[in-house]
Length: 183
Length: 117
Image (tube, one colour):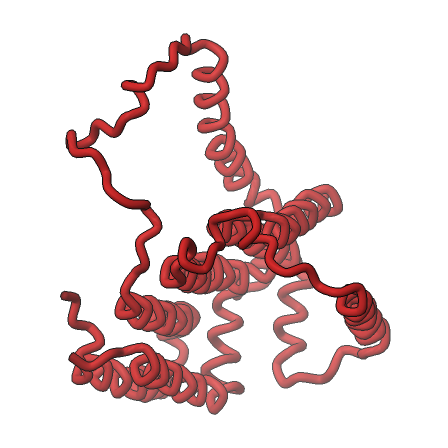
């Protein structure tokens, strides 16, 4: 059952990713990305990481994708010739670039694979508690996924949490400084 | 994972309903194309120019601010469910967190980034 659900979701995620790069229309690419991100949210549910799944949907599918769509609408597609076939396909990369891109892709896959095979589970404070929940089948213990995240984030990981607010502040000021035009 | 069965059923129905509706109308509806049928009728005025208007960069700031406050909300959820356990310690923590973000909010407000028109 788990394998079946995983296969469907992984297939959808791959289909979405392939759709992103194959779609001629940038808006369709964004919709393909939406499919991929939603499928990954489903994969998080399969991993019993329900909180992360909700974050994935809210922040990535709901927020970041909106940003992408805004960028697509901000770029004048007609002016850039992106609405014609020639403009969409663009100048063809030379064979050297194609080979380099393929090599980089293979190299990246090998790196990730090697990391996955070698990296032993690092000891993270509080990881044991989370691990117990995950192995217990989620919600098996007295506390659910969300409660555990809350307990850890607001006690053991207090400083990173407060630093996150500073990071968000920097992002906010940066956005206003870069994109806002004084009138 | 059985708790997710209703969600899976809902996704299937949600995806199936438009597919069935479009499929049935495609199979059953009679089609007699006529140039007049393809004109826009919503408000009676012929559209001029394309729909791909370039949007003002001003809306992008609002989108970025939306994502940032979206992330802030995410942090509120685990805090809210553990609020009783964390007590005043948690309250001060979250007050600090939101306080820092309010600084950015006040800055954006003062700069007029939230002005709509």
